[in-house]
Length: 368
Image (cartoon, rainbow, N blue to C red):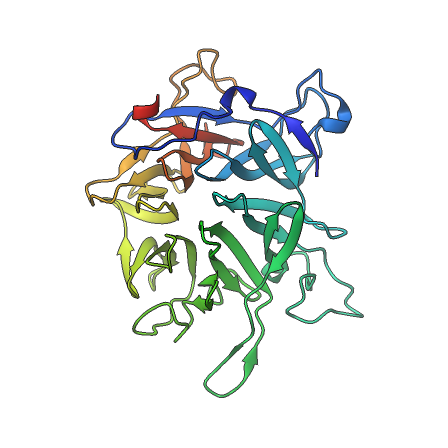
């Protein structure tokens, strides 16, 4: 891990109290970089003085304004944590780990995310539920969840399940997306694919539950494959949000309340994902309208009033421009990944189709 003094201009900006109420949000871009005058020893992992990461994505933000996410430098993906303007690179501490992404952070500073394990020795494979089980470079089983706090990492894996015939099924893959104030972790469990075997999952103080058949999350016990639990409200999973793919291969968001799953799509959308929810039940995500290009995305924030969601399309508000584009430029694609208790939103944007990713914080109008 390496710590670098970055984003000092933002320190303290995002510790907000009141909920967001309307547009326009103010967008602040985030690109992980190493200042030209910095010593090599304090640069973010993979960067030299004067260099900027080729990709940056902000994934989560807590009530104090601490931000987590991921960046790419030298072809390697690293996680990051920003606290009081200090950036710490996060890399899961196992030899040969190929990527690390920090997805969520709670008020206590606990971080969750995912890492990609190195390919193991085929002549001496570890158990399928091992933190280092990875049979090939392209196998999704190599993707594992992690929990990080006070400098220590641990792996998040879903326990072996038993089917109706008594057969045991280990689950080698997992993604930890967000962690609530009381330490409950939401994400997904998967085997050797990110399709039919992938199901929403949760790791809580009271045990694990999932969207497997009779997995304990839904009142009717229905199996929901190709799903992800991306976040939940604190206090015993009163509300859980995520995404699933239906039988016609269309992706929807969902909201689970009291064991009942309800699909969610903004009007006119043909693709939706919900990525996070705060204690006030504001939730954020992304969608695409029918007829738009496949890579097009709009961010959104849905308030608890059930009125139409607020669209969040990154708009450059920097007088000097954003990544070479002028003031006022609207991004081609925006994804909102995280929302804190005060309504501040983090995510990523691409200025053009297929262009590099940049992180952002969107600040509610009552705090501009």
